[in-house]
Length: 60
Image (cartoon, rainbow, N blue to C red; front, side, top):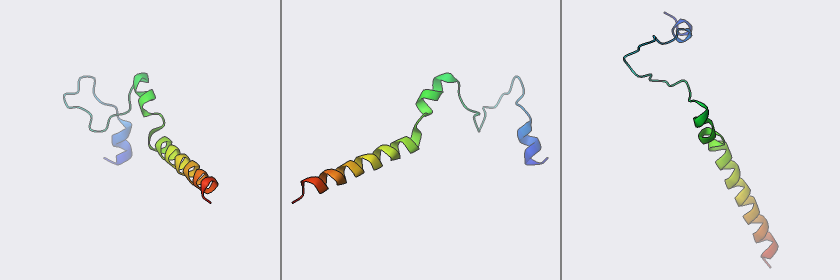
């Protein structure tokens, strides 16, 4: 069986084993996942830029 065939099939209705690769969550998980790593990196870069600007303004 090729990979494409395997992933195109759905799980049985009464599967006994849990999924090893969850297919995503419901709407309640969307708020927790939004932003993620990229959002944190953006805030860190923004904070560093502000710090550099403030240091440049107040250094003699």
